[in-house]
Amino acid sequence: MPQVASLALRWLLRLFACFGLWMLLIDNVAQPEVVTGIVCAVLAATLATVVVGTRPVGLHLRPGLLRHAWRPLVELFSDSGKLTVALARQLVLRRRVRGRFRAARYRATAATPEAAARRALTESLGSLAPNRFVIGVDREAQLVLVHELVPDDAPLDRMELG
Image (tube, rainbow, N blue to C red; front, side):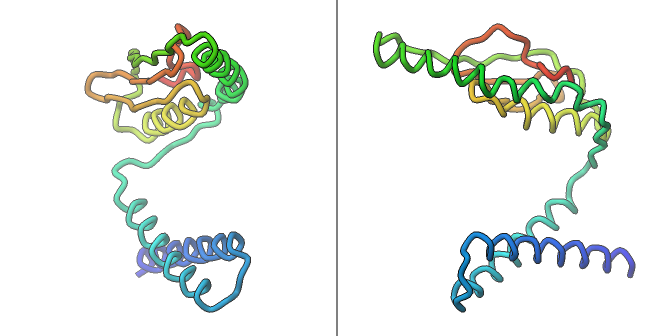
């Protein structure tokens, strides 16, 4: 029974968080908006509870994994400049910009909570800068696949997680 109570409590907390966010966003207490918010909050809380309950491996996020997390934040500015220059070249000079896919060796492919945290950070923070999008990590081939809008020869694993 304690496991069911814990699950119910987490679902209820998600429900209140989703409904509270809904009410903050709509800023209206009319009955149709409140009913819609309740329905959406129930659906979102249920879906989140199911997804979290079915994940095969938990995450173990050690603080040391975030030692290079500042790099994607810096790249927000530098990549914005690269993309602005590429856009200007394409608009003014009619030079076509061709993106590309790149792959690099990635060793954090084990089925452990720490490796899962490394992959999650690589995929989320690696896609933060506007020039790059981390498609994913191929655990079997031990590769990370990245798409770049403007080709860049910098290392793909800039946070050194893999």
